[in-house]
Structure formats: structure tokens, C-alpha cells
Length: 136
Image 1: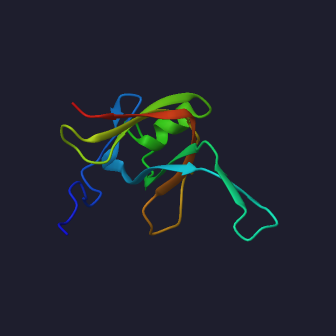
Image 2: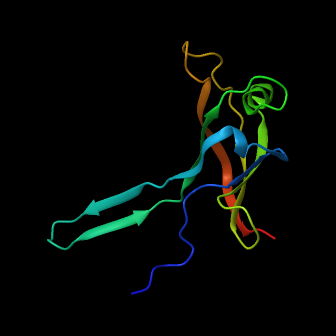
């Protein structure tokens, strides 16, 4: 069986938040679904009924905490509590998969531990469903 096409190491991504590119400040950018499964077991051995619920999404990011103009940490802190638009393209180039969605911005941490890079980790709620597409 031949190897599948389309597999790649996650690098050279595009992460645009409110029309500003921030991939150079991030080490993680991921849409994470939460999709509960309900299971009902009846009294017979093969009597299982299952239903998969509609997913709710979270946009998880990790990266540098840059607290000056042009920094994602500053932009998120300034927009905290408001809705912002995100486009995630895991691989740069044309004809690549994209997701466009709205998140509620959350304030990132400020400061850190002596001797360490200032970093941030956030999980922001996605409003509604992502719109799946392909880059031009």
C-alpha cells in the first residue's frame, strides 16, 4: 500500500487574528472539538444505542508572550471579552485546508518565571462552527 498524500509535519502555518499574522509568535494553534457521545445500554447483549452530539470548539494556542505593539499577548489583552476573527491554515501555500472562525478573546498571562521565556497558553471558546475552506 502506498503512503498517503497530504501528510506533513506541522510547520510553516498561517495564523491570522483580526487580519494580523501571528504564526511567528506561536508554537501551537489548534482547533479542538468537544463532541460528547451518549450511550444507552439495554437489557440485551447487543442492545447499545449511541448518539454523537454536535461539537463545540475551542481554539488552543501556546507561544511567546509579547506584550508590546505587534505582540499577540498585547492584542488579546486589549481585545479581552470581545469577539475576534481567526483564520488557521496549517500549511502555507495554495489549495491548502483552512478554517475561519470567531473566538471570544481572553487575556493571557503577564509575566513569568526568572530565566524562562515569557510564554502564554490559552484555550478560547469558538463562537458557532468553523467555516472549512481551501486557500487560494
